[in-house]
Length: 359
Image 1 (cartoon, helix red, strand yellow):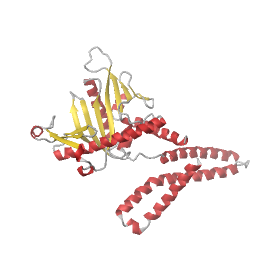
Image 2 (cartoon, helix red, strand yellow):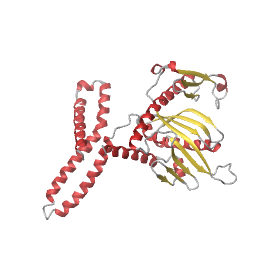
Image 3 (cartoon, rainbow, N blue to C red):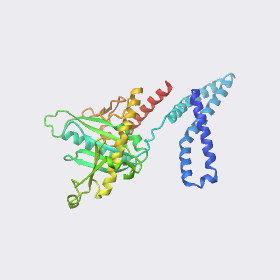
Image 4 (tube, rainbow, N blue to C red):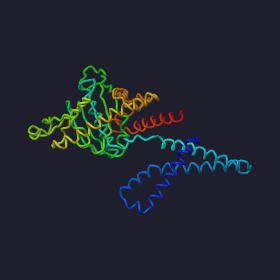
């Protein structure tokens, strides 16, 4: 392990010891806010410190084993133990390096998930419905909560657009690499000649900002329009202007929310979504600059990039960024996407590690 990495780890260990001492100080622990903050800081470093202690212990064992290798009677046994320790050391070093990678502060946030039909007409809208159900099932497996913000139907089982708020642990971190153009290749139900059609849908994942209220934004830059919601809802829909449309004048971003019967709640949801969109524009710029510097495969945040193909005749899903193909299309669309999600995260970590090692 490089000297600069060792130095960083020793600094983290010192910090952990300081935090531990502070958490034992009654004058500090009586302050609930301070205690919560310290506990959070300590939890972020304790696993790294534990792994670093184990790493140093393994190194010490290897030094001792080198001495035993000089003893003819112990040589064979020491040689086997040395190999075992070296493998453990390599695995632990890889784990520590992942832990040391700079964290995306947004990974722990909730997220807004936007699905929009692209090329392909009715078939594209049906594909959005498939993706919507896929993410709902995945969210259920993760014990995440879903709130619908906007929905525009398009025939049986299809949507022109769906916007959801996803609430839970590490939502943005797990979903952020889903952003981009998803492509489906299959024979539509309406195709009498049996020809394969190609349709697309765009997925955007936006980190949710914390508790956005009107006082937190410049409302002079936002035009607010109210209108009657369309779709299901009975007489109420036709009689009240509960739907809200917000237009951010400097950027031209428009968001709508009509899912709730309360205009106030719709406005709050729309404001949260608008704030996330404005923030995401800046985040994409930064990500694309970083990606161009290190030729990133997965960390571009480019919404126009074709990232994945769902090929029904061959029963396969291929992610074009990491060249990963899976042959479980039915299970995948039923929310079994964990392997893909983890592979994308692992590739992103590998790129960051390579960048650090080449510095």
